[in-house]
Length: 190
Image (cartoon, rainbow, N blue to C red; front, side, top):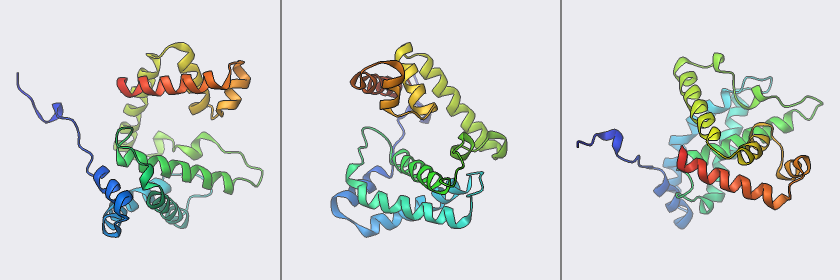
């Protein structure tokens, strides 16, 4: 049996750098991380197709994200996610916060504000996004119905744990437990 490159586990080059930043507050390591991720975060900010998209907003997003990365590097756990996944989760949350603040003038937040439409993206990005979505839908379909339902309500409908608890009549602890179990199962499936 022969092994090729695709059989080898991917390595995350940035996890050790994040650990150094957390442990030593190493500014040179942070500068390398910043130089690598800042352009990617700025591009992510510019993907937002709304009235709030601007180069200034994207620059602010980079600053907000990288400040949080510096301050929260000690919270990073390479067992739970890669460095890039962790950083882009922070970026997504910062972008959502920015949009919510900008939309406080009686406009509602739409799904298009949070994730650009596929037809507005470059072909490679669109294909990559469709593959990710297909993998997620396939994985969620393998979950028990009650876990999938809670995940969809929280991550697709944007409901809080408390709102899901109230809507379903489930105790809050049960909702949180189902989310935790579902996410754990998804990690093994995906």
